[in-house]
Length: 341
Ligand SMILES: [Zn+2]
Ligand SMILES: [Zn+2]
Image (cartoon, rainbow, N blue to C red; front, side, top):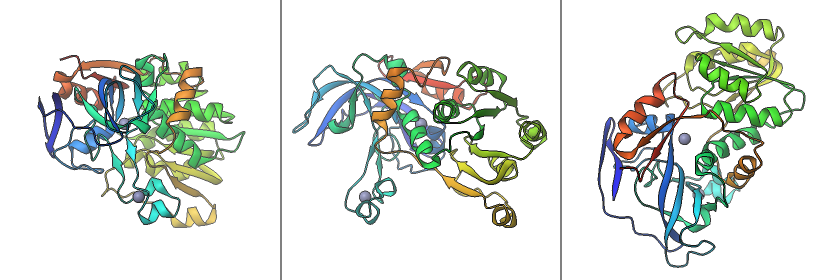
């Protein structure tokens, strides 16, 4: 089969690999659409949980090709969204009821073979039938599942005034969840007018264009919108210069949610006195487990919309162009057709 392979930091190729062997309980899936995101760039750079050689691709919609031993609940030909996460059930965090922090966390496309390939193996229990949902919508299930986990962590109080930095796929999905989850007002700030226009079309109340080189210079507009600060400020870009702005824009007693992924060695200065004296809460949100079912229902009912989010589509052979596209300011979500040559 053809597959994208990361052989080490900065080394990417599209080449032939042996077809994957399903383990007991696995199905073989033929990916039909796999989303690409900033995490893939981190993985290629050697960050996050990269283990080489790696077939990346963790936002997967595919067709069941073959049922392995003991794989039930699916039929050959079913279109499914693949939940890429697996936990061991036996490590200390798993046994303490915190499986998201599993010390043997297995994530297809991050530290195990993923969906930028003509075939992949996945546990049958982690494949969710689309039941007629358009694959071009269902490919947003994984990022939406992660956003649902973020919303779970945040536990938004109804009536909150929310500021969200970032209008990438995640920002646009999380904004809609918070909008429907009780926010009185949601403001999205990002450096791309096109992305802000999409945010508006998806129901966001206010948008603020940030200067990419100097986000702080644009913060005065945010101050004008909420002179006492926002109840919740969500950082969904991963940019340290943006995270550095968040605490000062948060209302006394409010919460900063760190949702975007920065490089592991990045640090951001903050004022301990400010956190202490104004009783700010800083929370993190990492990946997801067990959120696919809710993500699919949100997409099925149309409560969370994906219109305008997929901007680019590439065949497998042009994976390098897809990686370049996701770093640009025009692309929101790029998807790869792994069967498209
Ligand atoms: Zn992703
Ligand atoms: Zn575990």
